[in-house]
Length: 189
Length: 256
Image: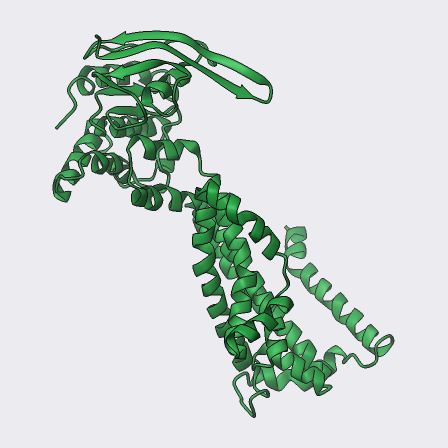
């Protein structure tokens, strides 16, 4: 069995206009360390698939198993980088990342958690902006905060929903290289 | 440039002058018992120019009377916030709580302070706690309803962050739900303060306690009509200032 097994996942949404079948029997197998990009038109169900694996909503049919355990709800072991980043606007960069670090390391002493938080911020080159609020950052910087927060969850699997949609075209290749080259496979301690 | 300053500074004075002229005309023709603006000023100026004199329980400068009223409003208002805010959060967070209590709230909300006050007097036996009870009961609804609306309107994206991180209930409240709903909560606080100030007059009139409203009613009974106008203007001025102050506080949270 693969590290992540999605078998026959189905999802439909019912609105006043009728029922739309978004996913009709999706199968997906991923091995450890593997990287997969799902490509499709808007409305084709990419976000729905990510939400199902993330456990934010249950599939109508089918199963999702990660590392031998069925997915029944959301959890930090499936770290998520949301489409609009979902940074909390009332928290600074540091506090946004610290929220994740504190959530997954409840027993670690405060000083150690602070050090880890600063490491994840340094990983995405935002140390100088760590006390800024999200609205003071550019789109690309916000996205890096969201990635830092996703990695800070120490996930078995990092789910990213259109993580590069807000990047300027010129910065995408560079950021992609630096991100996939250094950070993703070996997350810092 | 000239037009802009005209509109900003001169027109409000023209509006005020028009009202004073209308007041004078009415007091000379239609309602001769109504004191003219000048008569109101000459009979009232001591209350404004010497705002803290005290000749008796009900004959005091406007500063003192306003202070009594403001203290009473502050007590009732803080009680309203202390009760209304948690109720609003429960209504917004729990579907069951909403189903159970929303109909009662919609039913209680339109009840006038004049209706609550006698009940407060029956329950508390004294006029001061009855007045505070009435203020709190009437003023808390905007806080309850705005808080509930704010909590229910929190973006699912923010809640999903909390779900993925499996935040504790406490952290979910302090890190996500409370900060996300604060702008709505403070709109509720501003509206509640306006209502609290509306209620104070009715409460003081009925209980006869010293304060701007109590003074107003006493001067009506003593046929000193100019002092009624003095009280009305004082009530309006304080209400205006309170609303502006709360509006400034609210704006801070909106931009945050």
